[in-house]
Image (cartoon, rainbow, N blue to C red; front, side, top):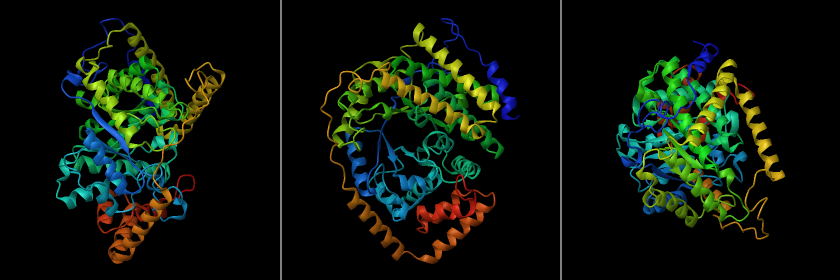
Length: 515
C-alpha cells in the first residue's frame, strides 16, 4: 500500500472525547493513560542527564559525578564534528572540537569515555544521527573488548536522520543512502542487540526549531511511520523491531498542553500501528524520553530557568514519560556547570520522592480540560499527517514540514516581540543584571589535546588493516549489504570516525550534491 493510499487510514481513527467512554485504562490500548498499568508505582522513569564536553576524559569524569548523584542512565552529547562525520583534526572542525559535546574520533576515545563504567549494567542513550551507525559500532566494540555480551547492552541511538533534514541540519549524505543506514542499524540491532533501541524518533528538535505542539506530534509520528514502512520493505519482521522503537519529545512551558500532547501522541501511534500495520499491542505502545525545552531557557535572569525546568519536568511526568532529562539553569549561557547539572537532577528526584505525582496513575486523566486538549492536539496532528501522506510520506514531505515549522517559529517570535506571549525577565519584569557566563573548559587546550592524541593514534596503528577495512566498507556501500558489521570491524582495526564517513562520502556524495 502506498503512502498516498494510506492517508485514508486517518479518517478511520476516532476522535472526540466523552467522559468515561474514550478514556480507557492505563496499560491498555490505545494507551492514552500510559503504557503500563501501574506506571510509576511499578517502575520510576529513568533519570538521565545529557552530558558531554571537551575530550572523552573530561566527559567520563562528569559521568562518574552524575552516577554518584543518583542518575540512573547516561546520555551522551557529541560535538558537531563528531555529528557531521569529521575527525577533530579536519580543517572544517577547527574551533568546534568539544564545544557542544564530547569529541569522539576513535575506539580509544570511546574506551576512555566509558572507563570505569560497566556498559553491561548502565543504560546509555546517544544523541547521534548521521553518524549513529559508527557510534554504535564503537560502543559495540567497547563491549566486545570488555567481554560484555551484546545481548546485555541496553540503550538508545537516536538514528533519526529525517528530522535532521526537517529541523536540525546535521545530515551528511543524500536522503536515500541516509535512510539505508537507518535500516542497516535497525536490522543489526534486531539480530545482535535485542535490548537496544535502534531508533529514537525525535520530536524534540522539531519543537526546538519552532513547531507547535501538534506539529511536533504529527511530524514525529509521520517520520516514525516512514521508518516502519522502510524496515518492513527490508524484510525486518514488525515484531522484531517495533517494540524497541522509542520516541523523544520536548516539554515546554504550557503545562496542560504538554500533558495532553504526550497523551495524544500515544493514542495516535497506537491506532496508527494497529490500523496501518496490524501490529500487536506490544508494538503499539509509544515509549518516549523527554527533555525539558532548551529553547525556553533565557540568558536574562537565568535562575528563572529553575522554575521553567521544574514545570516542564512535571508536565513530562504527568504525561507519562519513560525517561527524562532536565536542563541546567545556566545552559542558555554555556555548558552546564556541575552545580547546575546536580540541581537539574535533584528536580527530578524531588518530583519522584516528595511531590506524590509518582504515586498516582495518570492523575489528570478524566479532567475535562486535559481530555479536551488531548482531542484538540490529536485532531490537529492527524490533519498534518494526512497532508504528509498525500505528499508521499515523510521522506517526500521534508520541504512541507520545514515550511510549517518556519511559519510557526516566526509567529512565536512576533508574539514575544509584541508582548502577546510573556517571557518573564525578557519582555516583562526585566532587569539590567544579565548573568555572566559560567567558566567553561579551555576549549583551545582541549582541542589541541584531542588533535595530538589523534595524531599519536594514526602514527602508531597498523595502516594496512585500516586501508583494507575502508576498502571493504566502500565495496559494501556500493551494494546492498549491511554496513554495521563492517563498521565494527573497521573501528576495531582503529579506523577513525572521519575516515569511515569519508569512505561513504566517496561513494554516496553529500546531501545536495550527490555522489
